[in-house]
Amino acid sequence: MADATYTLQIRNPAGTLVAELANVLDLDAGRSINTPAALRVRLAPEAIAATILVPDARMRLLRTGTDGLARVALNSDFLLRSWRQGYAGNAQFVELAGQGAAQILARRIVAYAAGSAQAEKAAAAASNIMRALVRENLGSSAAADRDLSTWLQVEADDGVGASIAKSVAWRPLDGALADVAEASALAGTLLYWHIAWATGAGKYEFQVKAGQPGADRTASVQLDSAAGDVQDALLLRDYTAQISHVYVGGQGVGAARTVVEVDAPERLGSSPFGRVEGWADRRQYTSSTGMSDEGRAELWDKRARVLFSGTVNAGAWEYSRYWEFGDRVRVLHAGQRLTCMINSVRIGLAGGAETITADLREVG
Image (cartoon, rainbow, N blue to C red; front, side, top):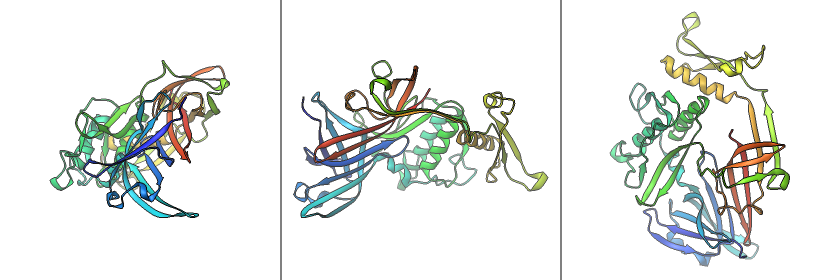
């Protein structure tokens, strides 16, 4: 059975293929939840022309598995952000470093004044709010000099996620998206976002998913920690930092200050001593709806840590053939049947020798 191999495709910022490098031997790539993927790849200088190394050159890493099929590693393209030339001993090299296309989201702020419809999001499905924020700040609803809709589309609204309201004036766009997703998670629906290549459209697409960012493979992938499918397995229940009731302070002074209270009923009823209080200073908010959302976000931050963690044995279950980043899988551990997600993946290649590290987290 042949070993897996890697090919690096490089396109110019407009998307035209300018180089394809087979049998890449040295690289480090990784991706984790709601964070742009990252890539570092080392090449011999004669393998690549310096003229194609320009900011935002698009890089795509293809992994050809033992079944002979090539698949896009980490389901992400990378934008070239830096490169360097040097020597390792007497051997000259060129090293390229890129970030996932989702890094584009960090290049915008929510450039609208407080009180505007674009910055003060009325109660709506969280995923729809996230898509609106992207459309308004780098998509088809943005000002002409901020509009990237030639290169990036936003998927259609689907109403997924909790109904929330949010104030995001002048926030970094990626931070605003994280806040909206966090508020939805506290209300019971985890959301995951990404910028992926939409083949049919010939451009990138901003996507929001519930359940998991990848595929649901619970019917086909069942890992058994006792059999060695999961290494360093750990089941943790930690309630140390959990709060169940939060006071959210808005505008005003002293007795005239607006205070909204938000609680988590299931935590309050868990014990006679279940009321654990916290305080959140949110004086920038004027509406009780926005303050309530911030209270729910605070409760989410101060939740119990109830999770399973471990590392997939990629020798038994081949990466990209049987599973990929963000997939949902089953795990048998200590007599329990758990539903877990591939929470992060790191690919290492040194002299052609592949190392895959994939972390699991329980999702319930």
